[in-house]
Every structure is written in structure tokens, then in C-alpha cells.
Length: 305
Image (tube, rainbow, N blue to C red):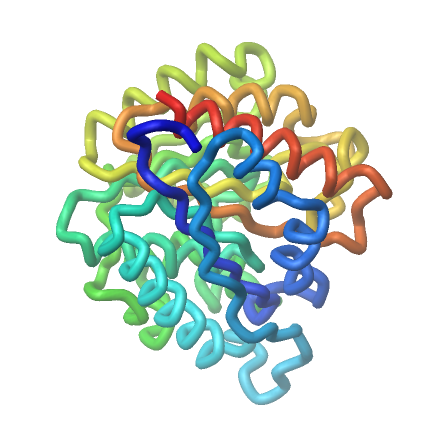
């Protein structure tokens, strides 16, 4: 065990309620099966495993076509927030294993309840700034950030699942790995109107460590409690197929994403990491194992500071 370092509280949230299709609900178990927690312990991390909540697999919600499973998504957000608060009460850094991107709203809600100012570094190809009227799909994992910021058109059940509305202010957010051509016109408008900080995938690919260090310092200076939300769809699906989103020849190389993540996990005030959008059905045989090993190595370095 690393001497005199804080424990890591691990929470599994196996859900695809907010997703476009099933698959992501398998991710927490898949990461356990490739020994993520054991790899962390072998590296000296004091891991406190708080288990997985009940699995929830996506199915069509024909009654709420524009806000698929909104009640279930809100319930899971509230439950995740409660479990995160329990970790905080034990002075644990949180590792939340999703699940679709809406899981990250629960992580943020739990940390906001701490009373300290939260900063969110949203490591994702997509800003998730849509609302039900801006896209036809009804998948809430494409709308999480809009609901955290209380964007006009957000659904009250989802936006109000945390301790306050809005959950975050605009300057508490930095979208890292964003691709302009993957955003809807509505999202681009929200970013411009709100002045949300964004860092493009091209910038990161060119200088992963340097851009990550500057971004971590920027958002770290605005908060007392930094959270990193890591959506694996920021990785080019051809380079390393891990994500639910099968976009090819876009996003970051796996190497660049991991190099940037390592630096972000060393940023000031880090209190939590959320992993989302991993679909084990899409991965190559070695893919989830490699991701778990690389994630464990980087988290161990962060916690050994």
C-alpha cells in the first residue's frame, strides 16, 4: 500500500439507460474480470471496492421517444451521487465505472454536495450539450452536459437530479478532446453563447502532455475539487476499438489519449475519475485488458504523489 496516501473508492454503475443501444452496462464487470482492481492494489493503491449497483440494460422507450428512460436515468444519477457522497465522507478519491455518459452527472452531483467548488474536465469527443428538441434520438447520454448547465430545453427530471440547478456554472467546465465537426449546430451555438472552454482533439494529438498540463492548470485554478470525466469514444475506433461510438478515423490515437490522461490525473485538486462509454462487445480480445492495465498504471502514479 502506498504510505500516507488516500484510498480510492470504486463504484460500479452498469447501465445503458441513457445510451443509443445496449452494451455499456457490461463495462464495470468487464473491467473487474480483467483485474483492474487487483492491478491497482498490486501497484500499492488502497482500493475500497463498493461494488456494482443493479445492472440496467437499454431497451426502446416508446412512451418517451425524445427522452428515453428519463426516470431511470435520473434515479441512477441520484443513486450514484449518494454513493459518491459516501466515498467523500470516508475521504476517498472516487473512481466511478460506467455505464453511459449520464453516469458522470451522478459523479458530479455527489461532489457538488461536498460544498466545495467543483471543476469538470470533460475528456470527450462530444460536448453532450444537446437537449431533447435539438436531436431526434432521445439518447440522454448526448445531453448530460446541457442538463448539468441547465440549458434551456433541458428536462426537469434529469436536470434536477442533483442538489441544485444548474449543477455547474459555465466556467466550471472544460471540454477536452472536442471535435467541431462531430458537434450539432445547437451544441456549437451553446459553446459560443456560454463561452465554454474547449480544447480540440487536434491540439491534444499534437502535444498530449503539454496541452493536458495547461488544461489541468486552467480548470484547476477555477475549482477546489477537480473531476475528470473520460469517455473512451475520444479514442479513434480503428486505433483501439473500445467505445459504444464506432466513429472511425476521428478522435485521438490510443497512445495520445493515454498520455494526456496521465497528465490530467496529476492536475491539482483531483478528487475523482469517471470512465464511460466502454462497450466490451466492440473491443478486440486484448483491448479491455490493455485499457485496464494502462488505466491502473496511471491512477497509481497519480495517487502516489
